[in-house]
Amino acid sequence: MENALRQKAKELLESGDVKVVIGYGWNRAKTRTTPVFITRPADVDKLVWNPLCVNNLSIYLTRKFKDILALGKPAIVAKGCDIRNIVVLITEAQIKREDAVIIGMTCEGVVYRQELWKGGLKPEMMPTKCHNCDVRNPHVSDFTIGERSTFTPPETPTGMVFDKIKAIDAMDASERWNFWVGEFSRCIKCYACRQVCSLCYCERCITEKNMPQWIETSAHPRGNLSWNLTRAMHLVGRCTFCGECERACPVNIPLNLVNQKMIQVVDSAFEFKSGYDEKTHPPMIVFKPDDKDDFIK
Amino acid sequence: MADRYLDKDGLAKLISSVIGKGGRFIAPATVARQTVFKEVITADEVATGYILARNSFKEFLFPQTEVVADFSIRKDGVELRARDVKAVDTVVFGGRPCEAASVASLRSVFTWDFVDEFYTKREDKTVVISVACTNGDDACFCTTVGLSPESVAGSDIMLYETTKGGWLVHSVTDKGKAFVAAHEVVFGAQSADTDAVTLYNPAPIEGIDLARIGGRLKDRGHYEDPIWAELTRKCIGCGACTYVCPTCHCFDIIDEGTAFEGERRKNWDACQIDMFTLHASGHNPRDVQWKRWRNRFMCKFNFYPEKFKSTGCVGCGRCIRVCPVRLDITEAMEALSK
Image 1 (tube, chains in turn green, orange):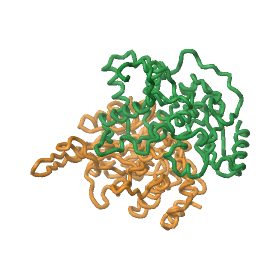
Image 2 (cartoon, one colour):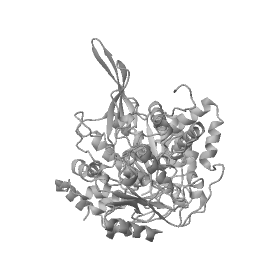
Image 3 (cartoon, chains in turn cyan, green):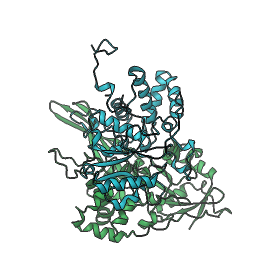
Image 4 (cartoon, chains in turn orange, red):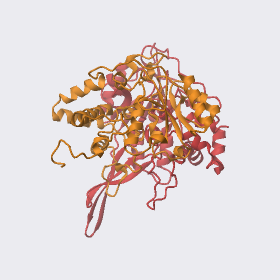
């Protein structure tokens, strides 16, 4: 797969169809992958593909990265889950489908617990999203690299995130409040969750609007709660459960629980899951005359 | 070298003694599936087998958020009421030699043109008990920046793990000696358990030359060098690296409350966040990410050494470990050593 990827990248760069290939490369010790931006055909061997390719590179297609946009048309190496974010960016008019060449990679799961990685992919290393993945074969792409995956996700979603949501749903309101206040109390306001999220593409985030200061920037319980809840609300009907925010969080706040819960709420209210179809707009940004609720008519 | 001995029972007694006198005991402990510095009350909480805590212990000397004053705005003017620093006796146990070396760097910046009592009063009351490293990972690079797994800079007491699970105690500073003397009953005499565990000694990263980096940064001709954009293109502009860094010290002053009554807070801030240098006029001198990243690198390898003759980067590798895109500062050090 790696060779096929490099070959495709080389073709695209040589033909001038794209000016940069956004993909994964090794860090110095070859223990982790890191985003790379290949602009010369001679450098395509820096591209790698393996289960350590966890990052969702679709952030680099957003307008937050002006210097990358300035390089010219990009090709992006993307797993199915990453493509879901690209689809949301298209439905929200952030990019056009033709703005980026999508090199879709078939995928059998990625490694979150990278300290366990010894070269073989085991289920216990993989995040919940991989165990329930229905896009192991990229659903929107210009080229697809890799053998077709035969994986069928379980009928009922399984995994730690779903189990924990059930446990939290079973709590009474005050227990649930205490749980979340406790989790958010660790927040250090580094905003890694926001910065790593391709759907947090606002150039000026609400927490940066300081006349008045809508969200207190202090990392005290009040400021942490308002920041985390506001960000959660801004992702309703949009978040694809790619898990980048939780992976980026230096203090291990279980943001996947918040995001997956919202996904479930949106699915039951609107029968909508984000990131599958670039022609369907997300429920929070459309109005339909046949809306099932009366108050909006 | 080592003059005393401490075992796990001794540690338990030490913790109760410090807390009993109204102090706080900070040590690495497990929180949310990772090892972090926190206030502990028992020896059982203290983590073992860790490389180093995810956060640095700076937050106990320089809190992430603290009230420095209260204000009231009335018809006849503004009333500003200063807050006193509540500094309690603090023991930081189980830090590593790398992060201990950052204490002097923090002090130099907080006493440079103005003595920031919110820092100095806390640091004055803190005893740093470090443990020499017996383990490390591929993000560790202390030996590349002139430190070592047993360098004593910043530590009041240095401990060496023994094969039987105790520690050989080496008092470094007068503060450390006084602390050991004040806890005479806890620190035993040298026991038969004298076999120290072999230290983890990473080889310095080849191709990195601090003097060359310093020389290159001193010449402002590097300022617009395209190398900065190339090295840092993947940076997403979060503050994770600066917040876990033991020497990063920037803060913001903000007011919270109503228009008439409230508190003034000193909050950590990060030079990697785009609004950090945004002027009220709308102009931003560090308008793109590579300029922000260049600033952080300059701070570590030019401003600190030039201005304070102290080290800006202690090689703990925390920024590498937490970076969501695995941007490795040593790769920039290597590129700028050429």
